[in-house]
Amino acid sequence: MAAGPIAERNQDATIYVGGLDEKVSETLLWELFLQAGPVVNVHMPKDRITQLHQGYGFIEFLGEEDADYAIKVMNMIKVYGKPIRVNKASAHNKNLDVGANIFIGNLDPEIDEKLLYDTFSAFGVILQTPKIMRDPETGNSKGFAFINFASFDASDAAMEAMNGQYLCNRPITISYAFKKEAKGERHGSAAERLLAAQNPLAQADRPHQLFADAPPAPAAATTLAPAAAVMPPAVMAVPVPSSMPSVPNMPPSGPPMPPVPPGMPPPGKLSLTYI
Picture 1 (cartoon, helix red, strand yellow):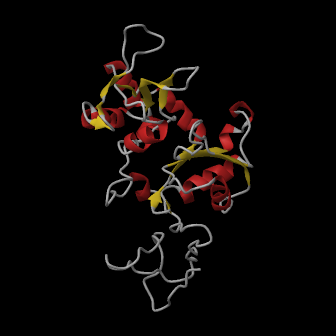
Picture 2 (tube, rainbow, N blue to C red):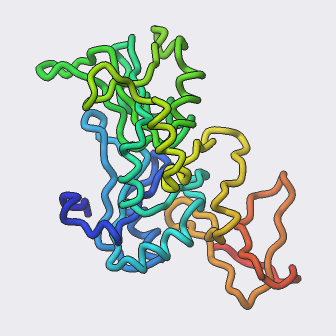
Picture 3 (cartoon, rainbow, N blue to C red):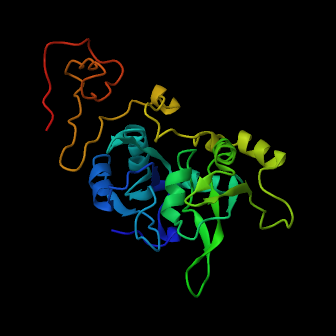
């Protein structure tokens, strides 16, 4: 099921899926997105030590139209209670050079990549697995790491909130990382921020609030009709046909109901049964 080298994939037909709960598997993603079109392969990068996925994955469809349709109907649906983010993998990869890269120092030796991801993904989309620098022979942490965010809003928020805070038993230090191609220059410059602000792709990766009690409605929800909420495996919500009346939202104390696409008829007395 794992995908081959990136160069062999059809990038135009490949989507990026982020914000995934730790219980999500490649099999579940395959079955879920098969509803949008024929899937060629699914790949969820895993941490080399824990062998756990890092909250995102890539799905290649048979054609570009299938990928576009999957983005329209699957973006921001909930899987295990968390809204997932779906966009084109090619557009996602172009964001890798936005420059919102931070350096984290004074790390406790017990901190691993998963803990860093879980901690810092609360501030925004992380494009790659956090990179903890390790001794090549022992595999032990050298006490510092790098995190690549999708936007400066996310990296600024992470720096403001976490610099000097204790993570495990040590207060960590956070600053913008030095650029590889320019010695002595750090990321986060005014020029980089200007380029990022002019890049419409970067605007799609605004900081999310997946760990908040009541996450705000995403901007994408105002333009796209999200699909029905996704339950755990084998408890999939049945889509509401266009010919059936819509179901009014339940009161706050009741179970959440799937969103109703715009343009539906007014609520009626017909009740829907969810399998």
